[in-house]
Amino acid sequence: MIIGRGSLFARMCRSVQTVPVVPLFYGWRQRLQIVWIDDMCAAIANGIDSGLAGAYGVAAPDGIDIRRFYREIAGLAGRSCRFVHLPGPPMVAALRLPERIGLPLPITSENVLGLKHMRLWPLEDDLRTLGITPLDFTASLARLAESEPGSSPTNR
Image 1 (tube, helix red, strand yellow):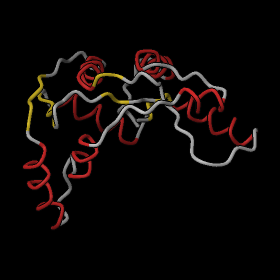
Image 2 (image 1 turned 60 degrees about the vertical axis):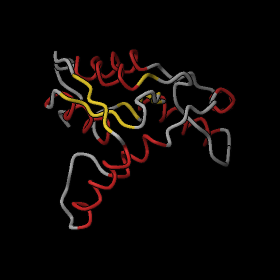
Image 3 (image 1 turned 180 degrees about the vertical axis):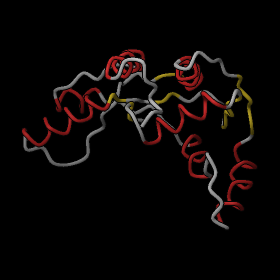
Image 4 (image 1 turned 90 degrees about the horizontal axis):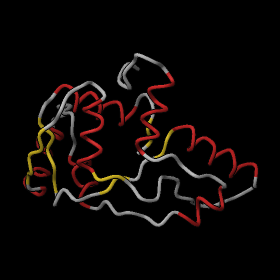
């Protein structure tokens, strides 16, 4: 998950900041591995400069508990959130029908399936090779706030 202004992260921020209930699927014990956008850019630049080829993982290695992730992004807007535990398979089936007819929804069956298969990847060797130490989630949010004081990550 890239932390920055825009994309999936901004969509998640808007959702959590406007809807007081956050659905959790597949045991809700997942840990998200995040990376601050500038750290991702540095990793790419370092890889190019070093002539590296292949696939490298770039994220804070410890990850963040999914509940803490949602609580902190809700807190950006001074809100709190309540969690609702929902079974994944029925939700995937329920989402596929509107997807088939082209109805846009804030969450997709692929989003839910992604949570089912989420794993914490060992990234220390890749990060060492790329020469970066990514910021953790709290530091990434602080950088985001510093980048445009008084604005929300959902403004773009």
